Length: 68
Image (cartoon, rainbow, N blue to C red; front, side):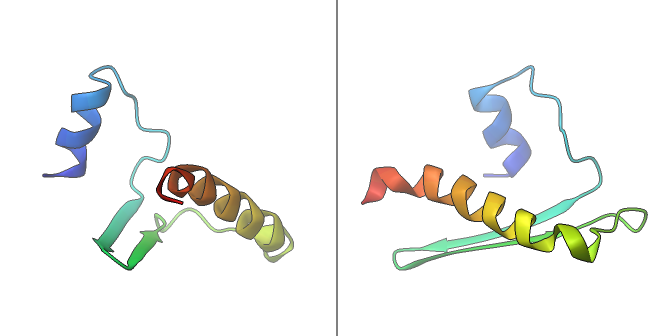
């Protein structure tokens, strides 16, 4: 199922908060791989990398916790 279809299934009024970002998600029984390609006009400053890493960790942890 395409992500757009999946999102619409859960929230038909969803408005994308990351336009032009390209998400690649690969799931199997032992891993979850998430890759996001940012638009050319978006760059994350080096000084924000630690905060971004922490925020992503906690966001993904929150989603995965139901499987633990």
